View (cartoon, rainbow, N blue to C red):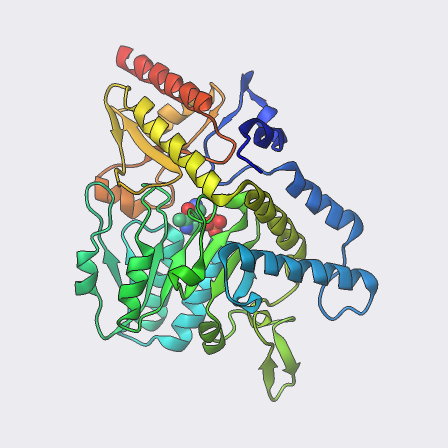
Length: 408
Ligand code: PMP
């Protein structure tokens, strides 16, 4: 399929909605994306026709649901080019996937004084799990800084890596600055010291082709709801050797082989990490979303969104007193900005009344805000269905808000 924006917009019924009597301009895709009809229909079809608890059921419906769930795992494997589907663990999202690694890897591989390296531009979900490990185990959390453009200072990484470094955990794309981090380079450097790397792909997987084998990532995580799939489902990719090496995250059904009060043995991969009834409705709906974007083409999606970012920077650049937060040469998916002294919340509230949905605040990345000495930003973030006309509406809205505040 070629990139047909009109056809794509037709696939998302919510885009026809009016907000305060104005057409919805949805520019909050970094928080969550809208869902195409095929994904919504997949969910209802599953509940209406194929619903039964999966694995171990001998009856027909259970087998149908099990096959659909395992086929979804294979779809995810193909989408990120993992070697085996047993390297794909379904989680509730990026946050749970990082917590899984922090807990399992942390408990089994780290002791007091060991070091984990993150960057200064991480989402709270790639900071706080490591701080919990810090409290529990006495590990040391080290931070790669970024410069005034929001580019990681990789020369500092050499100084941060020591004999005690156990893991580097880093965002592929920053959810506040839009910076695309050189994760392949970081992984190569880390591996030369035998250090594994976790990549937070929450803001990359929806916007560019990702190949976990080409990157040689040890762990790679993302959320279904940011790539046109349902909420409550996400993915942890882990290299088989690592998933074999680290212990289960949660205990319960599904993840065991045999339970006695004397000794319990664990299930094989990936089930060892999937305690309880899996979200087999969510997994199949996520697969539907991945098939949907694959049919359009991730390269085509990346090109479309790159053009939207370029156009937004050009058009918003016309606004008096605009300040862009994050000016990395390699960026993706979003633009963060401030106008004069207008509080981001005020700006967001005014343009909301024009039907424009943007996010304002710290975007769950308070250390980024602290580094710039600001409270928050206004963030416009893009998806496959956004258009230049919508960016024109955004710019007109921002101009109008700025004028109102200048008059005051
Ligand atoms: N990491 C990044 C870079 C994100 O942008 C987000 C979502 N804003 C998360 C992690 C957390 O994702 P979720 O809430 O879906 O678990």
